[in-house]
Image 1 (spheres, rainbow, N blue to C red):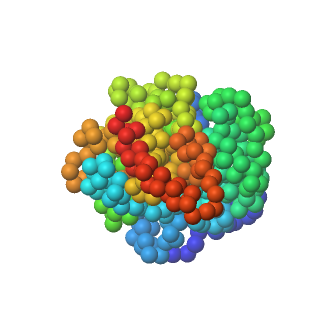
Image 2: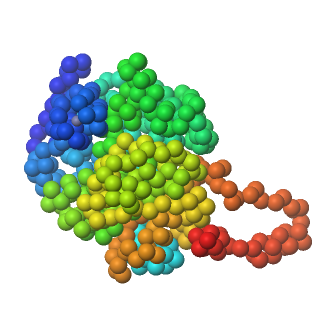
Image 3: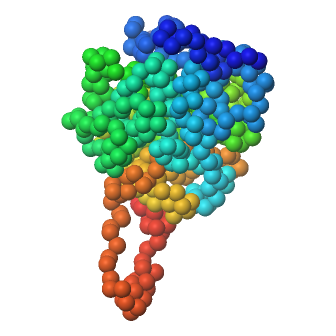
Length: 445
Ligand SMILES: [Zn+2]
């Protein structure tokens, strides 16, 4: 097959990827726009835009190019991603995605789940969170548009992903954090060369204003003006999960939910694998986890409502503190169609979830991951998983970035560098409660 070219008015013809994206389509009223359009939400109904694909063409590409010939990165399934300019694709995400699937025997034993796995996006590259998937698409799209500045509004992880990927792509990054930011994430952005500002207001308020900034300046925002492209990156988690199980889709996926992009696009990714004849994914249920202090999607699912009612976030899980989730209605639909459910966890339960994961699997996650583990525990206790069923929990962020927020980790005592005090200290450390014991105690409360 000879490489195709794509016409660009500014830079002449460019080599084309195998993307089978065809157009932008409204999620609700089916208005459609050319893929090259800069429109990012439906002018008629205000809902977000989705990307449509030629699935017949994609299926034939998958026959022509076996997995062994594909890169082990975010572009492994490039037919089902929206980037058409091969040069833009080559500059982004070459080491993103393809995160490990970890068999979680010890955590599974604690929770009574025999076949428990963790999709470990806390080790995603370059910025140690699931957001490396979505921001890959935003930055590649920015390069397709031959633009040199990118903004974002972030609770934390989008910012670090944008800062890192913008630096590698050679574009300038501008990051707007709402108040109550996680300090280490903002520091990391600055250390990566991004320009960072903190705005008075929560995420939802900052998001609305950033939309106005984008309109006033013409600057693209990774998760606003580039959102239809951004969201497509989340599907890659579903593709990888199923491929890592040798194309046997798991019985359950448990995902944290904030704005709703990840869990709704897991659903889309599973549908696409089935459309392409790569896997039977109909039976996979998707369950979502939210903090009690910000659970608009989970509440709507449990109340069997089709739309979310925005809330004022009040939770230590800052990366999940989105009170007006833009894709909430898509998550409700996805969970409903897949026979899944939702759960939520209090802040003490979230930190106990972090501890339980650390003590059993040696993985240090942030409060979003603690939320997932705490809700996983509740779903298991409620009998949601039948014996023998396979359960995958998504661990979306790294705890190294949020350790300062952890309330239960006092700084170690300083003792003399002499044998006797060190032996006494060791004896005292051994007599104390283990991390596993304290996590169990917290979750049992
Ligand atoms: Zn519409």
